[in-house]
Amino acid sequence: MTIVPEFLAANERYVAGFEKGDLASPPARRVAVLTCMDARIDPAKALGLEEGDAHVIRNAGGRASADAIRSLVISQQLLGTTEVVVIHHTDCGMLTFQNEDLRARLAEGLNADASDIDFLPFSDVVESVHEDIAVIRNSPFISGDIPVSGFVYDVHSGRLQHVG
Amino acid sequence: MTIVPEFLAANERYVAGFEKGDLASPPARRVAVLTCMDARIDPAKALGLEEGDAHVIRNAGGRASADAIRSLVISQQLLGTTEVVVIHHTDCGMLTFQNEDLRARLAEGLNADASDIDFLPFSDVVESVHEDIAVIRNSPFISGDIPVSGFVYDVHSGRLQHVG
Image (cartoon, rainbow over all chains, first blue to last red; front, side, top):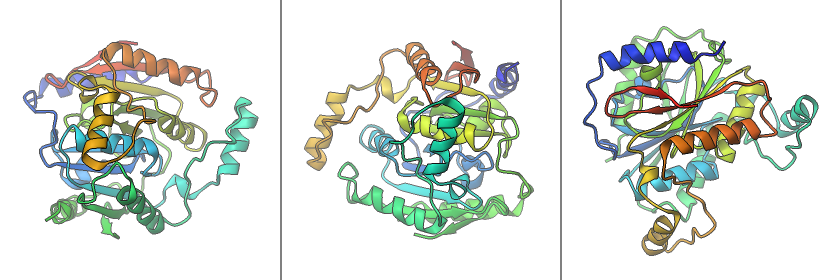
């Protein structure tokens, strides 16, 4: 039993009403959004994005990891985005653990050595947004004229708070 | 001029109709979706996902990078997901360049040395899905009993093709 049949059935319904077949690859609104993978966040609904509007990069925490920078470089250099919006959120899983906890769990459950992995947890969601804005602004791979804004999304109200 | 006022105005409309304030952090459908940041893909619409249903991890290409594995570990070990779905897509930007091209552009435009960055481009979208399924299945940090499925999403029809 996997979720595949459910996804395929839902996709059939999407295809039946699909009217977005002519969109170009470069995002129409020239922005890349970096946010958390959290299931409660629907970036398109929360920000009013239509298909074709914006790149959406998501990982655990919405962190400006090296891989997020890789994605932003491709977004800016090859697909013409000129702005970044970073969104972390309340009640984030990243606030609930430390690297040592997760490493111990992987050692115990999977006999796997994650001692050199930083899982990028944080203890303050406004601070983590500020940190990630700084990482992006200071990256040698991001042009200095790219505006970078930061928000905290409240999963209980759906509201964005502009914090940086 | 940034996109911030537009995002805040759209978010006000979302908040006005928001009815999802009681959702728990662990995804209700216990699945993590790994897909591309491409602006034309709305994973929630294309897969029938509601807020609260699934983790959504997105990067350039939908690649199983080390950072995607970091996110999957947190998804599985801390938030209870038990399945992974990998979705790459037709007309992907990752099919249009090689590492050398992007490194040259960064050297020329930003005087930045990206010689040690692999931007993870690919030349065949079915192969790239198979590669990333293998990376996830073979990761020491992912339990062997986690099903991993792969799809190619057609940006011109909205249709998912099950390829692995």
